[in-house]
Image 1 (cartoon, rainbow, N blue to C red):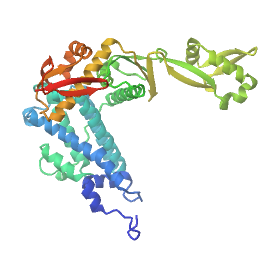
Image 2 (cartoon, rainbow, N blue to C red):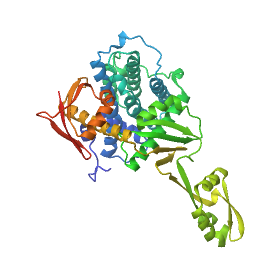
Image 3 (cartoon, helix red, strand yellow):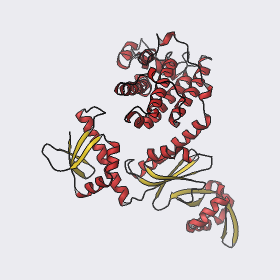
Image 4 (cartoon, rainbow, N blue to C red):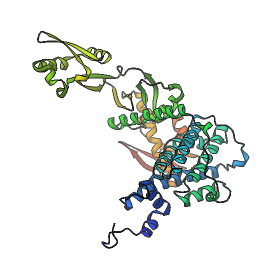
Length: 438
């Protein structure tokens, strides 16, 4: 940027548009303060929506539900967290704080900012999203109290942690959460090493990777998450406590069952071609007959070759041992399965839909439409409603079979089927039906 060339950016305009916190975050996290940098409004906008807005929304989530539940921290003595998610987010908080302190003590602003950004994403897109049902549940159960206590503790510590980067939102959070005085007059938070559980963090990361891969499969096959599926198969070599995380994974992916296998042979088949860059000169005149042999290779022999690491071939009157290093190995999902790989994991979803699965999928689409209608009506989030539905026979059969799913997902006091005046016509896919909410 050059003032004389007129291509400079007025900082006051940036602050007016995106806020001072986002401006500071962009300056401190993009590169070392003493280094030259490319600066633009896009960088500040990214800092605002990725970090500052996410922190604001997380704080707003806590404030909203604490107000609804009249949650008063002083009325609930602190208890060691039992819930897996609470223990995980507190471990991640202290691991992040440990790395941030280490960086700041060496005058490194950029890498600690990256650590905080990653933690904020985990807090919002995993901990809170996975814990929403706990905050939405009726009554002040011990698990709900633990969720409130954990989130408040995390947000208070986060406010202190981000104070050098985003002083305004840090001060606002700290005061609203009951902090004494100013956040800028408190000591920087100290790491609680006893709260760090490396095994839990590693296994939760594996669970999140499994979820990510399975979501990619759904996206590639066009199967919405609202459509339940029968089974998710995970092939992995590293140790993983499936029983500990099965519920989380099943809920995220919307599958009825999950199992871990050492091999992916149950859901993929292998297809081979010679890697001509590596093996062309090596096999010379045998390349063409070998390619023909590989093309006709059956699934069982291909699996055996993968297990052994080599393939013995008889071509043109010669015996040849071909190692996997000489081959291009392509995986394809077996009939009825779709798969994806990454993070040293292989996952596969059974994509076959039974009548029962299809019916539940229809009900979940209806639930989404009802939730959208509630938002449109601006109903209080804790208000129970009476539903009247005018649906076709297929939808009615599905709703009657899975009425418990409807009641679990929507705050409903009564559900009836009828055609009445003043019904709103709503739709999803190729389905249209009448909806009345009171």
